[in-house]
Amino acid sequence: MKSNNNHPQLRVLILLLLAIFTLFVYKAAILVSEHLLAQSNKLTSISYKSNPAISIQPTQGTTISKYELQSNREKISKAKSWYWQLSGALDTSQKVDVYDLDPQIVSKDTIRSLANQGKYIICYISVGTAENWREDYQNFPKDQIGRKLNEWPDEKWLNVRNYTRFARIIENRLQQASQAGCMAIEGDNVDGYANYTGFALTKSDYLAYIKWLIKTTHKYNMLYGLKNSPELVSELKTEVDFAVVEECQKYNECEEYVPLVNVGKPVFAVEYDVEPTSVNTVFEHFNKLGFIGGVSCYELNGCFKPSFKVQP
View 1 (cartoon, rainbow, N blue to C red):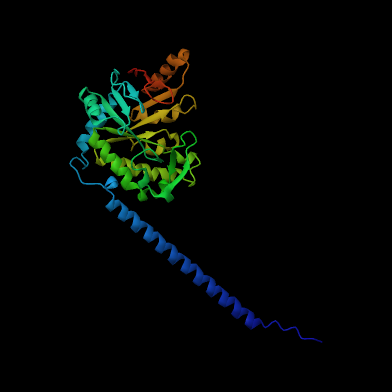
View 2: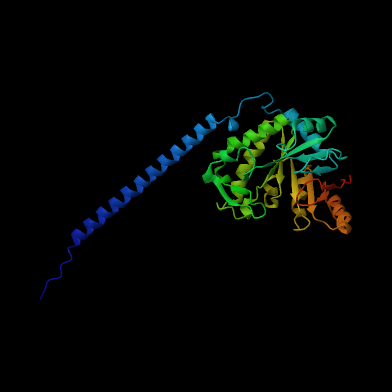
């Protein structure tokens, strides 16, 4: 009868060698990955140093002043009306307390003129997307740019989980806004946790990023406002300085922002494309909640109509 010998000792030796080889390959892969990441960070660092468009130079007024921030908060807390325009020639004739505008479209002279008239200036910056028409778009690391926004095909989501990779670009925008005369920042597109960004971002990712944004904005003696993102209000209500809210009546989200009002933080709210017969109803609801409201077309090109906050 033929013997059936499987050589058990040889099999054990082969399995041991395979395990050692697998471990070696795994460690080698880790070393290669770390080396490539280090090279990528090194190149990013070099690009920051060599590209004046994203370098940050120390300037006067970039240290945190608790007195100035408190004075700033007192000014915005007195607001009863606002006007929001992000495209087209800015209408500077509005009889409102607050202007919300894009500092890369509106000139410094115009911003300073409005400030001299006693207007409070909020400036729009998209902190969560890369917009291909901005001068600094090419400075964003390509591997940190994700999917296009559904409504805005010229914008793509940023991977805020790795915000340190583009933090210098964002801080440079904040510094420029401060130098232009902005008193506060409306940081747009921080709700990627509820959208398909290409990065599977979470609320925790955005909370960490927004807290950095608040700290950095305060460094330039400007206030920071939460944009939409009702799911983040409970955790940020004591840290943000105000909020800008779109279509909370349409989506039944207005109550989510009331905790901000309850701690003395103003909420600037807008509904889009409201039928003329419904405008007063929209304003009445905003007033009931203590919001500073308005109605507008989606283009925000001069079509904004402000309401006035009713003081209790």
